[in-house]
Image (cartoon, rainbow, N blue to C red; front, side, top):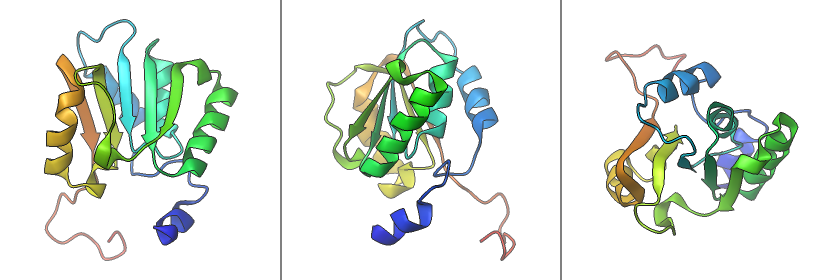
Length: 151
């Protein structure tokens, strides 16, 4: 994993996408409580976490196993004035230790591949409240033979 963290060091975001994509995805959710409990799984340095904190008055638990990412998230959240809404937790997405049915929204941008899409959906589902949302994004090719440069 050291090579992974070395390659990803100092990136503002750990996955494809941008704040506009996060806002668009969040805007598609309906009947979200005024102060939702959100779990951001595989948050990395937290670009999307901070954007979620700006979009809601809820509490966001941001999970990652790489402490430098969580430290960077805390630094950025403080600078953006949203640190009171974000709780960074050093924990593996493979064994999330939360009470079942506690979160209104599970959010994971570009991280579910670590455990596999199907496995992630099945294991995380128990954390959602009835009627809650599980929002994931993952890099995918929309054509059979993507350009070599993109690969």
